[in-house]
Length: 429
Image (cartoon, rainbow, N blue to C red):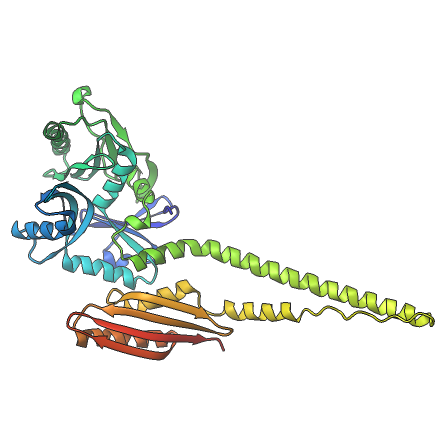
């Protein structure tokens, strides 16, 4: 699945942007993010880094979090987003991460849950890594994303990352931007020397305020540009390739929770399913009209033959019973009642709206009767009992406000988490 025709929200260098239909609009803050789409952010206060930790891949994130805390870059325990990791020995792992302040991390997921429509979230370095994998293959390349006075650099191939770093100029004057490109070139050559590799090419990703690298012909590698598209930002027209890199992503590469990824996939597919459903209903209705017309034709023929036989006394004709279409009419009635019941995607959206990020839904077993929907839901809440039970009760109230009846409900708890189960019924009137 690709994101053609989807709203794209981008947060870079403290600014929020909305891209839609070739137009870029600056937003005020995160509260303006609403409606179905995708959000790519560099997350205020976040740090993206390639590091080697002395442990196996299973505990690499734990060690990376500890090292970042020991270096004093965060006042609180950060959330760790892993873009790539690889075992480099018996007790050594290389890992590319983005560390995000936990309060910021929770704020973004809470906001996207409150948006009312599916939104999937990506880190900037997640976009760069996915783009690198598509274009590098077996030979290492340098991927550069320059925006304003910042340049994000990732060097690697489809299987390994050799270097990842963000360079920053003091201001956006011509001299400082040239110094920024000199830093990027120095990082590329240093990485080549330390890892004994040869960078095949530099792939440049542009933004609305980017300028291409100013290197001489002796740089040692060609500079290629990711395909750009014209965009309009206010009165300024630019050519940008970052949106193309975003549209090439898949929901599975986002950092959103699985339920939000599936909700986004379902919302992207619902239009096609609706068309199929409408065509099916039209086909069934057309069939019903055809059979009704056929029945009337047969009735007219029967009456005519009966009259002809009555006029000829010597013939005795016993007509065959007319075929009944009560089964077809009954099926159409059941189909009509089913169309008034909520779809499975609607049930998923209602559960996500009721419980948000607080609960993990482990089981959703839904079935449709003749005029009702029955669903069994099981899940857990990883918080203390009092808070978990309050969230649980609030979630049930929200579901009841949406027209569901809670037939059965149970709630149990232990020290670290609480488990719940309830059965929902929604009937058509």
